[in-house]
Amino acid sequence: MDDELKNAIKGGAKLDKPPEEELKAREEEKKKRMEELKKLASKLEKDKPEDE
Image 1 (tube, one colour):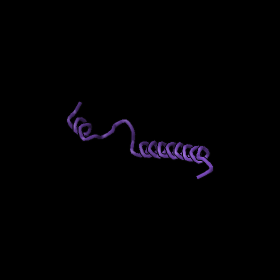
Image 2: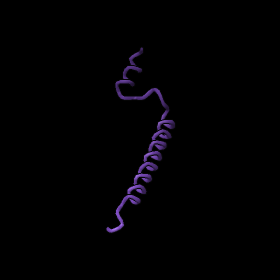
Image 3: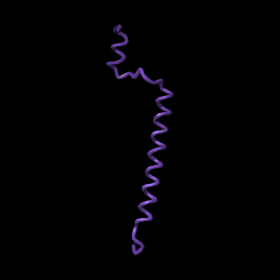
Image 4: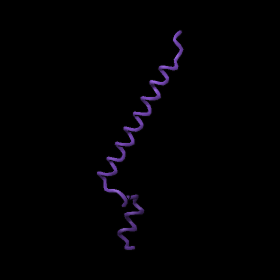
């Protein structure tokens, strides 16, 4: 392994994904989380007692 590559790895550079793919993956994760939160929120609404 050459020094330039070692320095890139030490610097935290990710060699596995190009930036565009990384961004897409993050967006997908965000969408999934938002969907889960929405489901939880609606479930909480249903479970809430009516007398409040």
